[in-house]
Length: 199
Image (cartoon, rainbow, N blue to C red; front, side):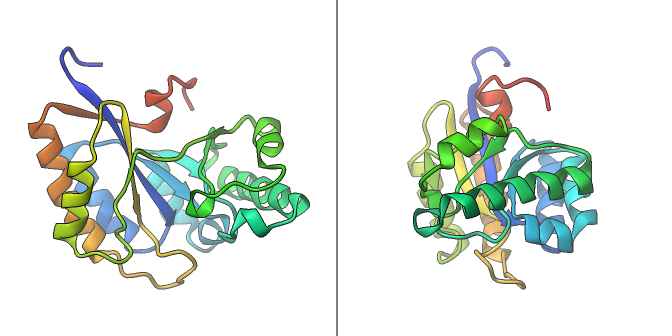
């Protein structure tokens, strides 16, 4: 950690999708690492994009089909997480260390399943509501809720929409990153923020 810097982790849920590549260009421009919580069904559909993400960013498990875990049987929760671990590892040669439940909602048996896979549950400090807000409002929401060691939740997908439009998210990221850099924030992955072993 750089002297005097305030750490934050930028995270994205629900991908990967073709538009994720546009988001990666923005992150590369600023040399910002992020954590992408990916859905197994989309990693299976876009393995080359998952690999592109993995080349510079941390990968997380976001279940296979993005269900509401609170109304999902424990056996199905285990399957959702286990299958996604295997899909991501097969596509990228990386086994995720972090997990985020869809909608931020837990379910019966989730804790035990995460322990079995040595996954750390990661929620957020601020969620941008970027699936429904314009870029200016996303930016305002994130910047007004920032805290040291905070975790920002945005999305490079839209729930289970197979063709999401994430242009507002991309535009917001273009505003959020320089604003936080100006405020002396340093971007790290969730693994670095939580002091997890190197992936």
